[in-house]
Image (cartoon, rainbow, N blue to C red; front, side, top):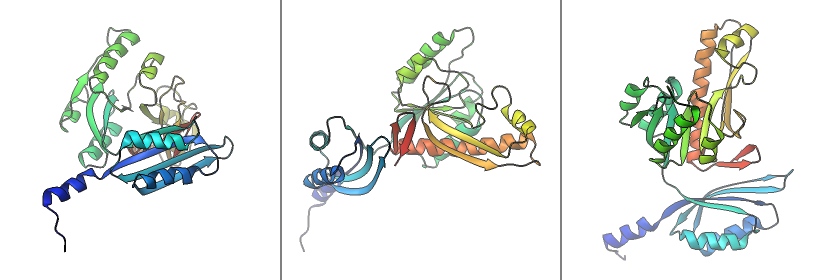
Length: 292
């Protein structure tokens, strides 16, 4: 038996890293072979792999979790050389992503995320919650997360957003979650954080817009209630969809019962969408997404 010094053994283990490789390219023969060949040549192990080809656009998507002693710069260089020039390639180290949450007054989706975070269900560092009202301070501070209120009172939309952006940038988040943040974002804000802002809303849009959509839905006798989580773009509530779900309702539901059911599905959908982003599972493809 050959015995290794403990410090040498721990050094070997510490070099083992996990990364997620994301590839978006024009489909052609040999892509998987060429990528796998580079990974093998770098003595890396494939832990998980998923692929998808959009037959209409001939686009190839691949998500691969790899482990080993990763030289990120060298690996990216060799993979780029093995793929078409137009290929988009990302190599992300598997570690917790920094998240900032924006909120207003509603507690249900924010509270759910904070509980999941406290229980270790989210692979994230929630750096702060920023709101335009004070209502949620006590809730947030119970989880030892910084809370900042930036009131919009007396400010133009642009002035308020400038203050929001300045505060958000202090935390350098990789993802911004709108946990029922009830402010319409300007193009300036959206452009500041491209493909970084996640929103949740009920799936009555555009059928029931404005005050109390659940009461409107009750009056129309709807039979399903849903929620949609999506990237924020300049087109209000029309960004690429990341997650959706529905729950059945019937004539016995009051509009308050429908609201309760809707809030429950909103919590689940937002948490699922955020998990997809935290795990680098989302590719944007036109105005839709591919989830691998």
